Length: 188
Image (cartoon, rainbow, N blue to C red; front, side, top):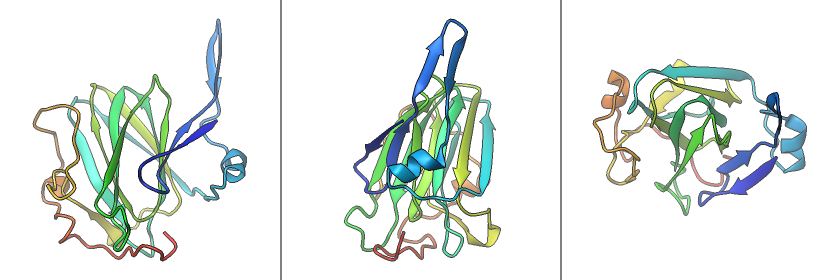
């Protein structure tokens, strides 16, 4: 397993070791031991999976507020997505900045997104499955989000089409108006 730092402190790309032969391949998709040895100590409590049929489906930018904030470990098991993390910790030197990476069934990369960051993705192929681990259960009362095309964040989504959005995501607020109780340095 290889862990790559990104431009956003705490957001990491995880590249699992893949072992292949004439039969196919094998990889560990998650190892508490390997993460702890790399200085990442997270207790994941829930696995989630989503399916998107159409290219251009956009989910996000989502997060859960404290006290039910979530760290996510995201991977794409079918198709390809452009996965994005946005720093929403007030007072952070990288507040409002984003990082994006292509995750695919082929490249097998994963993105670790800590608490205090919003998360979203756009499908760049059809028939996409995404799986992710979280370290806190879903709590609807803490559910929040930011508008996917907030100009103050300026995410450069990879395909220039009108995205397919849920009503919730269409009506999300901009970063300056969205509910947010994350403060840089408070343990996120």
